[in-house]
Length: 294
Image 1 (cartoon, one colour):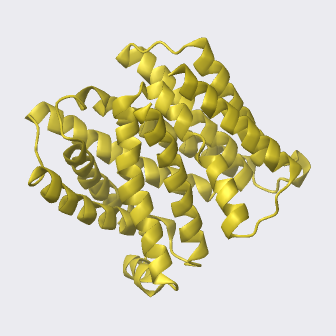
Image 2 (cartoon, rainbow, N blue to C red; image 1 turned 120 degrees about the vertical axis):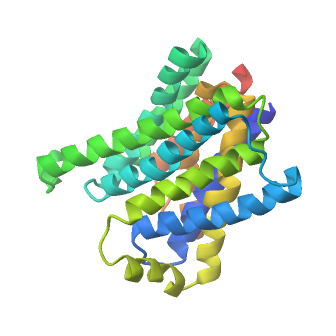
């Protein structure tokens, strides 16, 4: 039950962070924002590791290498792919493609962790995935002005990014029993900052882009969003995988799209439509089913 609570709370916190960053009104290059929030997260994680563990507890060399690889791929490189993909896709495409994450985790957990998803989990996962179709229905092809090559590139980048995020968490799942949670997350984020720094270094006018992070309006709201996304939610995210099967955690995390919808209605005054009500009911039913099954 603890793992279920952590995974659903993670989805809520992540969604709230997205709303706060939107509400801040900041106009920041996505790669600069990604690097900035990761740096903030790493600083807070280092402080937390010092308070909780007396400093970062570094595991043996092989485990440390896996943690660094997981963070580099799953945070640094993967986020870069996802953010690049968003430049080539409609929001509706992104919402649908995000459904790939849970299947990627389930497939990898079956192949490498020996997990065996139950029929109840499949039914609950199907309800969650179905709910996202009501949130982001595919646009009519006649209204799609994107060039097929651009859209294809975006789909490929998005799928690759989500796969790397899934691979990153599967790599470290076996280490949960031998490594402190906070130290594990901190080591991953260290590699994530390195990866996001390399990707940010590939864009032009880097100083001006990064300066946008410090000159953005409503700095307190932006900072709160960064802390929730790169610090609190990432601790909750990894903790959920520690106490749950990876496949269960991934399905419960998928409810973040629905929580984003709910928070957008509450805080951004977006309109509540019948399709959104259906989406919320389906997702909550799926999450409840998975939780009861666990």
